[in-house]
Image 1 (cartoon, one colour):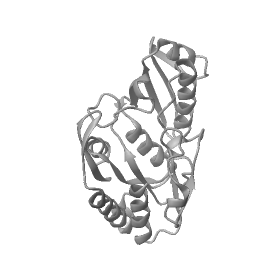
Image 2 (cartoon, helix red, strand yellow):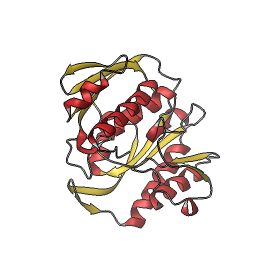
Image 3 (cartoon, helix red, strand yellow):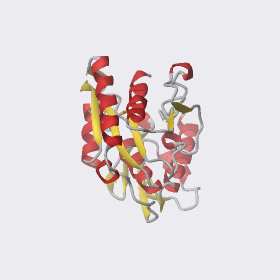
Image 4 (tube, helix red, strand yellow):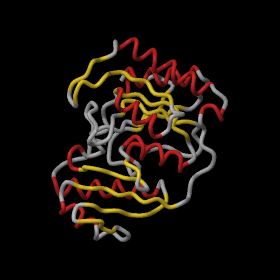
Length: 245
């Protein structure tokens, strides 16, 4: 909650006049409305067609990702790709991807740059590998998937506020502002733990299989991101494994 407020304070300090917070973990009812910084509006609850990017339109100037984690298979805190163990691997145009990369690519397709990301040190490293221009703030240091060394809370929040204020105060080119929406088609490939999920997804027009557990589809982002949300809802209904976000 207070990490989010730190990011909002940084945005306001940089001159932001319209701040939207999208609660996007688990049930998507984690943010306490009465505790949220008064400058921010809140999108809360699920389902939401665009999930973690609900509410994002080209009118916004920047995206700040608070509390992200590394993709499935990494030794980061709570590492997973959207659905815990149900999704084993994901690729976007052949490049390994998790929530960080897919959110970044989708925001860019909408025409808005991801400018700052917070999470553990593994998530920050993944963000730098995907796009080194994004500022990252490590609030904890992974010791294993369910163990971490925590940065002192006030220190971490001060670092978040400073990073957001600094990046959003920069000129558009320095801040990494995306220019125009991307319309070229992409290919999203997902390897599921369950062959039943991959098989059932073939009933959706445009979905093809690479093998018995791997489904893929082509399309332009952000539409492809929305389609992936449908895939997750199908997978949840078949496996009784709800998505984490």
